[in-house]
Length: 249
Length: 309
Image (cartoon, rainbow over all chains, first blue to last red; front, side, top):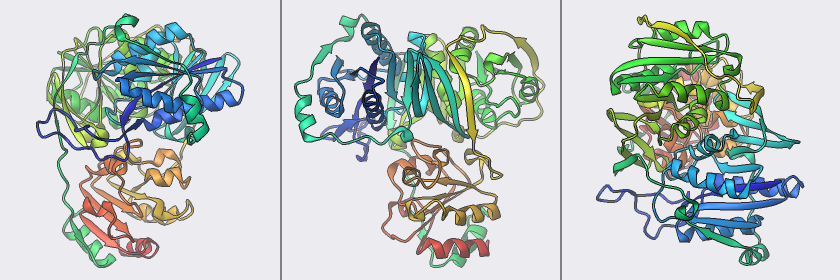
């Protein structure tokens, strides 16, 4: 079966972002960009499905600026077969991204779509669920285990009190949680091979999707700073402070 | 304006997160209705009717809603939502699962994990793991919002006397089914609701050593959490994870044991009232946010702490 994996180019998770002085957003100039960590897990899961003989073809898609080709090449080096870039320089809402992905799903007709559960920039945790709504497919979010069996996929989900398993009819949407797998590193020969794999570029216009949003960011501020407190010398002093100064025990 | 709050429950108990979500609804202002979608959930409807400030409770009792599978509950909520100005759910794994599906069915954007209500259409929410706070304004005809429960003090679960109305939806969409669940059984309080949280990190060295934290937690009536490093290392299950990708907590007292303080962990606990850090590395970033820091061997400090509290 065909698997579609959606990935996002985001600020690298090791970068400590700073808010711009004019409060219009965070400063991303000259900052290292990478594939969103949850998306790496999504690519890895698709590659493992292919290695098991469950998936026959892996198509990786991203919605983003031209520079997001870099993340598509990374996914190709990890084992995806071909890539689609829906090029948009604008910062799009999750709903707009889901609509664009729906258009790609209509074109590609995958049996399984795997996405990260959230992007570490906007922290929305919406796109997979929205894509499921728009396609009318079942959804298995926050997956820690994915097992395809016939025309169904069993997804074990990380929920607040533990784990929940659901059976979904295919085609279905899966979003990844951290423990689904540990992504591999791309080998140098695979990175070289990835450069020759096909990469198609589309636009929202060509897909006939309007990408307006009903949500406007008025300002972005740094969070209230928490100042460092004091170092205590002993456990006895700590307990004394907690009892008498902080009054929390 | 009328606001629909989706109750968080397991058909047996109304979760406290519902009270925080109603608190956010109260800040927006207007009539507040609560939807209880479940199976055999009549008692939850009665409990929801007692929540302060709620004027009506809608109960959709159907086997298809037992586990609030999004394929089944999202159409129910989206259909009801057309009569409301706002639809709110707690940003629990459950709310995060079904609410974006509702928003997309309504063709509106969702605003995730608000921590403050500025006005009926303007909200604050953390982005970049809490390293920035965005103020966002929505012009959507129906505002679909998940609420970070730690941002809002719970309203009282007693004193209200809302009318209860039974409703029905389209039931099973036939796309998904519940297979089973493994819930961690614990006598300790739930992480996000606990007044005291003790978390362990990579410094715990292994899962077995978490017993020191459990023992201290039982003495303090605390919940036990963990950093992502501890979860990734396989010391403890993921549902104990505190951080950007785990649970967000804001207890009265947070004790970080053997946790260096990675950005993504801080994102999950830095709104705690008092933070204590215990770490052998005095340069660990956790000390920059801790009210009280103690440098030393956690395997000596934690048992001593247990004796003295």
